[in-house]
Length: 373
Image (cartoon, rainbow, N blue to C red):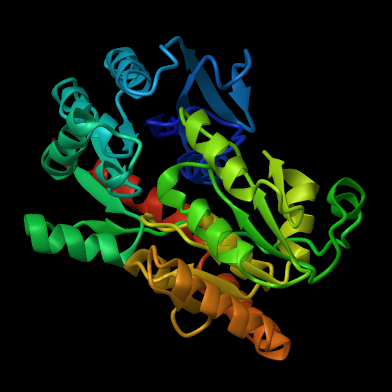
């Protein structure tokens, strides 16, 4: 009789298949790649995922929760943790700082636990003082409570080593080689042409820095367009502020949420990709832009520089004038932009791969399986 597959339970995502969100994308890419070798369950939130039992071989368990800014994740994670206590013993994999507070409990019931830290969430501007205090405490929990801790960047690994003297595992995000698409749908919808726009995509929250990009772009005398893709999360007021900042400038295009072929067209035909984020873990959007051969211009936070240094360009974080100067300089050197995009693509496709990420994660699971609690 063949050995049963190792059970793995993912807690901390809104669900898969993803519509937006770096953590959701990370889990979907790993879980679906390992579903033929591991017995994988993803705990999802009922408002995010339609009724379904599985997705590409991954079991989906939908849980009701309160779709509120401060209680959503906590209530969902608590429910998922209690549910997993009575499941077949395996690996319980928590994602992000907030859910890590529960990582000790499954260990008492015989599970092994893993926490992946995707970024220092307490730095995000959307949280109030109490939420930031809680998330900062969870940094300590994310090392102390699980059997193993994963971070998604070398920068985060050094942070944990310096602050907690902890030797954590660094497993980055990844990308796939993307398709090449002509600007057909984006021309029809928004009048966009190849190399005729600057592109930015993210969940529209303050720490992603779209307001810096709009302010920098508005003062530039160019016929090029600025395309901002994405939607808010508990941040409708901020999205309204972005639209007010762009008011009266028909060069600035808000696409809302985009995916699939439309997103491929937006990445593949932009003049350059700009990421003005104030904080990051390891940006999947930035990696995807590089994989499409986009020239990348990012804020100079360490997590962005880990990806773009030597292959792209950076500006001083939160400095609108610095961003404007770099944009202007790159627009004046299109041949430099094109060459930088080719170099960025080579790095992304060579050094970052979801297949490699999945293999490293599976190796960590199987190593844990053979150890005592």
